[in-house]
Image (cartoon, rainbow, N blue to C red):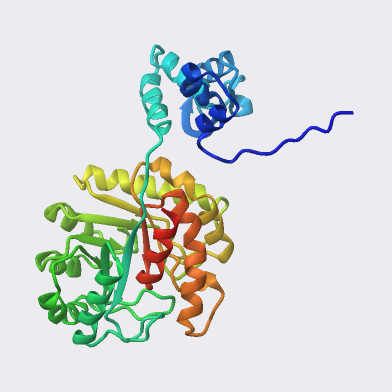
Length: 368
């Protein structure tokens, strides 16, 4: 009886693995596509579109799942699960380009999702100029101390510094726009030249900040709190971080599928922002905002699915409640935060919003 030895391959570099076994060099690159697999969910296809896609997939040995009533015409639309090797999916795409019912556009979308994009994680340092921050307890409420902290964040390796004049922790009291502005005014006059974002839900605060050198607006409400926010962003052509927060940033939502619901919400909001001529968009899945611990970890474990939105992705887990630490032991919180950040860095999440930039920069240097 033969003692077969088998191991699972998890590497993305299939071409290298083929080289190791002596596979023909002339065919190595093309053959590697046969060993890389993707599964897509395509939303809201008409029955003709779904039937053509399914038959095309099956003709190349790929798999395609549709609603059971597609054959009976009892429904108008169906979501579709399409899965296959890169080689099969490229063949499917080529054939769809010759089909009617706008399937050429679907083919273009599939092509874009088969391109392997190299993603490099950047760090967003946090500066809270509030007396009631959940993580630093008003440590930088004084302007001089805030400026010193900005200098430290820059020195430690931050790529962006996110400034907030209102706490958005659960149970925090709303701060009037003019009070936020009064907190920001002395600070913004003293800031060294750098790339900054303003963490605010208020269009009034956002406009003041953009008038005073801030380049990005980070709206934790995802444009829901202040309907005038999108007009300010469009007017200044600033960057925009759209965060998912649920119906209310402090209320836990009951999700049937948290990943799909957050994905769809971010997709719709990004499309809306695009329609308002906003171009520089970053999406944030909103860890800790209206989500249970289980929701948060489900989002983190399936973070790859959000790359298909084709926007830069920001994630913030730093010192948040999902770490399970209620006291103010920031050293332990930072250690646990970096542990969660490690796989996100490996997967290429574009921005990590963190308190301890120095620690995360050291981790980034190890990962690269």
